[in-house]
Length: 443
Image (tube, rainbow, N blue to C red):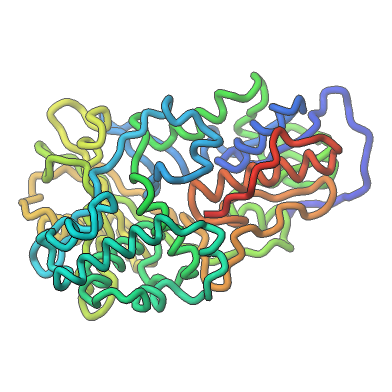
């Protein structure tokens, strides 16, 4: 159990100004902002690597990303916190490919005019219905984020039927797209958060770094002074003036930032709220040839018995960038959402059913595909049901702070914003000015 002692003790000369617990995006962003102001920081990560849920593994020449991360060029914080050009972002094909009732069709390219949306050969209703979809995306793209935060709040499932779109448009495009982008097959997410996600979709491009998702935390860590990051350090107790560790003794500080995942944060500070989570399970298959010749997000819009499908979405990563797979091979990443009864075989026990569904979705035989790996993250995404506060307080008391996507929005954008917010709170309490008084971004 963690220990608490809020009596301030003298710091040793070797102690940093700030201790950051957790090496995910929020912690790395906070550490970068604080060191940029001349403070000394020690970032302590329990694992043997930084990045948290943003990890990339190499397996026999394949690059496998943990989780189901998709970046968006319209994330404001992505450009504020990172050198996007150096990330070598690879955009997905415009729009999505949707499978429904035995056929595939292209839908939802926000760059198309309403007239061209209407002319598209997609079973999303009449030409007028398709034009309405194009107009809806265009209006959402032009809506200021602040205005979306003031809209009446309900669940995304209820809200998507109130946009004046045809039921076929909702079920054949909007529902499967939002399920994939939110990681929420039941669409119990706040309608405001869903609108913000759709706004980013309409304004930008879904993308991934050429080097894998771990390139994002790696770039943040590379900008920190040498010696800032310490991996393999387990924090067992916290206070406003330092932390206790399992094998490295006490480390004093003027401020402590808890920047772990939500469950670990509650273990360190039991008074914090523990959200519900959306699990994400990702299956990786190797194929001799790509089932599609472009990096397009394939969505399953079929709802057997009115229930969410087994497969949410799939993407041929090697079409996004050839370095994701060895020469002459294709890498297919497929995402299953929601809680599943895996049985004795664990998540891998679902692989035959996933493979069979992929044959239907891609319209090709998958019998020769090689099952490479499966990655199940039960706490992948903190849930955001209504009412959702996208900027929960990051200051617990003077000297003690908490950051993470569970304090903002369940996204890369939210984690980065949270890190910036907590750094500003620390600087304010220490009497130091922030580098810029930027408007808070919560999309």
